[in-house]
Image 1 (spheres, rainbow over the protein chains, first blue to last red):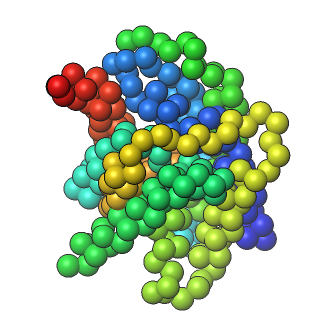
Image 2 (tube, each protein chain N blue to C red; image 1 turned 30 degrees about the vertical axis):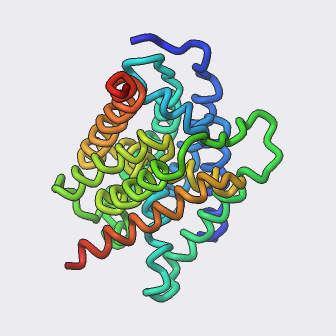
Length: 140
Length: 150
């Protein structure tokens, strides 16, 4: 059942990215271009997404808290480190540069690569290498 | 600041965003998993060194759905555009994105949508960081550097 839910969610996510236009790197760079001709579309994508997700997630968390079921939150990202540390800040700053240069964040890059765009496929391969380098550097 | 009214698409942006939010809400509500694309991507890449678990199964299923989406006959979906330009900057950008999202444990979906929806301060810091360098990079590439070149 979890597999079916995850599949449907992945499909919905991809359709949302396509409809919103976020798979178009020029549209994303248009949003990041605040000093030039600014396209605010991405802000509305975020507003729409958070507008739907926030009430649902807050309800789910309250539901969990009421049941006081700590076991349910075991695999939850909530139990992950909540610290604001150097890797979080440096990693996000570095990601922003890659995002700005390409106009691709991981989701749209994967969708564009799947629809057969060679450049997006190269980008995804480079992303994999980048993740691999990060994993190597952390192990030391 | 000049708003680019010609390219601004408020309704499809809002509608598409709501679908993304619905996806994140369903996944969290029904399985308590976070729909973070970079997390799913990096976890699946690490698979060969680990055993296939129930966690990798849902990630594979999510990725399969995501990759299937552009193959559906959608009525109003914008076609994924093919960026023009040199391959080298794109490869460097991909490396930076892969490295950065691995270090920060999330990208625009995990920290941006799911993290902010869960009112995570950690995610807010991440979003402010990548928005800042993203805007700075585009400003440099589009407006500052071309003026400095002969």
